[in-house]
Image (cartoon, rainbow, N blue to C red):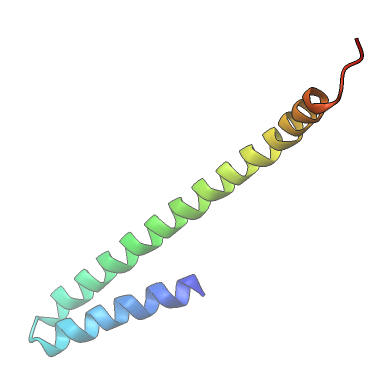
Length: 76
């Protein structure tokens, strides 16, 4: 779905550049640059979110155990 969105945006950029009278070579180049930039940004964002999610999954059980032990009543 994300790939379709990126492709659609780059094709719309190409269409708008073509309609405005830009040379075809320049319009293709600019639309490819837009496609590459959007793809790279989305890939880096997806990779970063997956790394953050894995880190939080590894740290959650440890903190959950500590908080449940600290909340238990102590006998004096």
